[in-house]
Image (cartoon, rainbow, N blue to C red; front, top):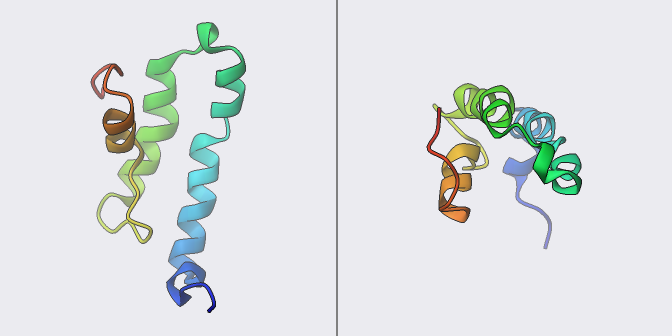
Length: 78
């Protein structure tokens, strides 16, 4: 059984690349969470991804709603 064809659609590949751009800083932030500027993380990385892909997320993933769902103590979206 192979991977679904939709994973290889150009739009999905573009979304995966944008996702990587949006979350690449997370590993650095985990190592230095005290220095995390959460507002900048949300507005610069997560919100930008969501804005671009919210109309038609080919992988069904938006980052700010996922953050709210998984981390209820997170501050409200900007």
